[in-house]
Length: 254
Image 1: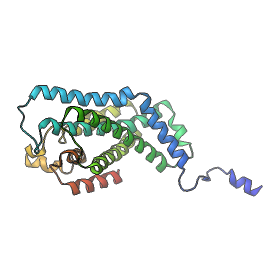
Image 2 (image 1 turned 120 degrees about the horizontal axis):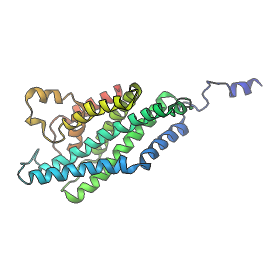
Image 3 (image 1 turned 90 degrees about the vertical axis):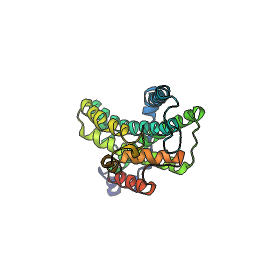
Image 4 (image 1 turned 135 degrees about the horizontal axis):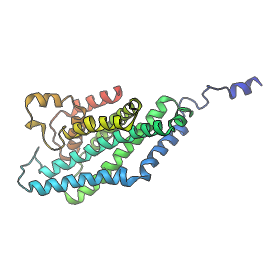
């Protein structure tokens, strides 16, 4: 009788150190959530990158000089891919938390036999998966139209992982603090989107004044774009080692 009471006692964890089944189930649920509406979560961002590339290509033609030793369009394509990864990784985790709060379904997750760490990791991994999916499909499409080749697959994956880790974590924090979608839109429109645009996506920071160039080195978005671009063209504006170290630190802290 005593053993039976202990077995079904409330608050007693019965899944070992990690509830692998529960964490995987939440991760799977989050992945299916963005796959069900893939036209919005995957196709939309990819089409946006393609439109940027096409419009800018038509606008500047062949007049733009090479940047970092490669044609400007190839330089731009890498930045556009990472820009969408940044925005969509943040969007996934933040919208998941916000929708759960507004619809009341977050109670089901909170009351599930999952720790806070397991919930966080599942949401972040789903954000990383969405970012990786966008990057992979975009890269395959761009390879057919541009002279684009991945020179370092490890760095390609590493920078996508670090970007998804940082933005997925930041999205959870933003989702927890925001009480309505207007507040979340403020964060997206005034922080995430501007930083992703102004972090070397469309230009080399070598063209910036020294003050802005110095500030860029402490902008995590710049290192995400710069390091990801390096995996394609083998050239970068910043420091590869510092970029990996800096992104690792801010991701862990977040």
